[in-house]
Structures are given as C-alpha cells and as structure tokens.
Image: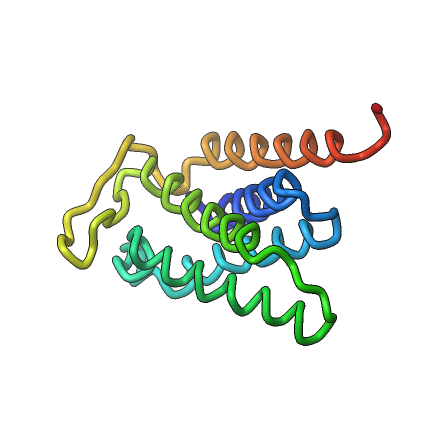
Length: 159
C-alpha cells in the first residue's frame, strides 16, 4: 500500500490498542503518532526503488524496529515529562502498528519476506497493486472510521 495508508493504519492501530489497554486520550494520541512514525521508518528505509527490503518487511525486522521504537517512546515520556506509562501497552501498541504494515503489504503483489533471514522467499495473500487507488482509499477510510468509533466509545458524548 501507499505510505499515507500505512501512516493512517499505524496511527489508528496504536491509538486503539492504547485506549483499549487503559491509557488516556493524550497518551493514546502520542502512541498513535509513534505508530505513524514507525510506518514512515519502515517505508523510508525499507525500499530499494519499488522493491521492498527484507530488513524492514519481515516479521523479525519489524519486531526489532518496533521494540526499539517502543523503548525510545517510553523512555522519552518518562525522562522528559515524568510520565511512566505501561510498557506492555506501549510495546503491544507499537508492535501491532508495525504488523499492520506487513499485513497491508502482504495484500500487494510483491508481498513481504515473512521468515527472513532464514529465507528470502516472499509471501503474498492477494495480487493488489500497491498504488491501487480504490484499495488505498478503502483501507484509509476503514482505519479512520475505526479510530473515530474508538474515540466515541471512550468519550462521554453517548454515555
């Protein structure tokens, strides 16, 4: 998928997970931004031309990158703001943000490298072009609606 779709999905998943695990709205938005940043990093360092790089488009690569970013995010809040957030919630939110990137890329014709470094074989669930406008709009809209529903669920407007 295109980078904007990854940014929206990464933000949404990280924020939804944080809200569901009991973090408040400001910290959930922060983790959403961290999830979006992670997806930018995956795409920025994960492409050689139009070809995906196994370092960032594999389960191992995304896990290592996500864990590193989660540690930096948690330490940053604690050191600069004095807020000690639930590290498990942070880790889960950021990991899922990275994994949703892999899932969306598995839907494209070029796929991902699921078991790199043990194999450079790619895996794909579908044959969608990464720049298919309909699919990018569909997934972007889906994740925007999911985050809006989650925010409404956690506000007092309808309670």
